[in-house]
Figure 1 (tube, rainbow, N blue to C red):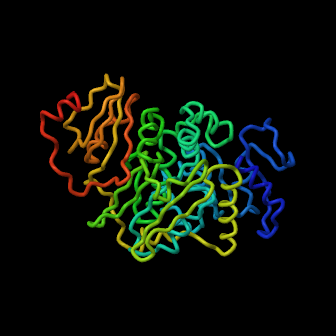
Figure 2: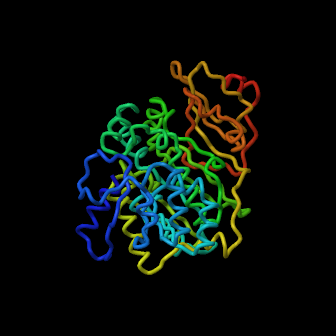
Figure 3: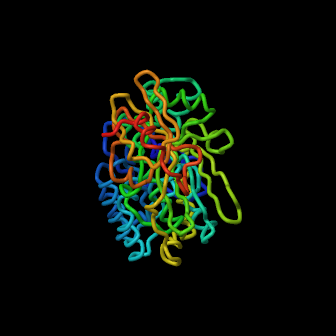
Length: 403
């Protein structure tokens, strides 16, 4: 879809002085709105063509994409990509390859589609004053959550709508399980703080286990539920990073980012909070970022990774307390010892819920909070800097059943 959108835009916009010479496809029998002679199923017809100086990679196979990008860069061809999974999983190798070859590799489209967040982090926020990034970076999940909140649709119906509109894949696991969002956060961390991390090292989950009772709780409190990617610099200089569902109050700018739109709030020491808002899903929004990168290549633009190479890179924080809401089927056993403090507990039919404070290590070391029948959502103020002692043991025993 993105490739076809890019083709259509380039046919009507000649300002780039660019020409698509050849397009490599996987399914030759699929109908396309472009001349048949444009297409090939042989990647080497592009990679070994000396007249092609830029390769645009828009496939959904991360391993194949990595091979294509590697070959192209080593051949001196600049690359533009939208493959966030490939970039996040191979970031150390790609950084080394760019350093060795000096060949530009741009991927604005890999994060938030039409929102130019990477280039802003590279150029505008290339200093130590960057305090935090928080954002809705996946348009598919945001569309689903909007429909659940505004139209009271159930999860399955909202997901089907997202698939029908092309916002979610037929296999939506990458979106709804938070994998797409954590891949994007991995990329943003490198440009914002110089942190080069594997996605599986960052705490994350998606929206697939949210329950109807969670939506009712949100409506009662006046909250919106959003899947939010966080990167927050602490006083010790380390960065707390995670992707988790979160309750947001109405005065949070992200609460009003709806449907397939993305929103990113960047906070710095001098400029305070700035909101970047735009479409995060769909062929044309992604194509707009690809075209922006193609335009930048005319001026030999490349990422400098200033936080990685010219400043002392930050480290990921591993010592933080999060304020959470947990709901779970009544037959589940949530050990009271998992939480530092339980503030309230309720039971509604066969569903229980509690709010309290938990150390992130309790989540990093286990997957109990990702099981079917359990949902975990951050509270509007997610950090607990100095958690008070837990409730008395006899009270906790009523609230949560020990394992």
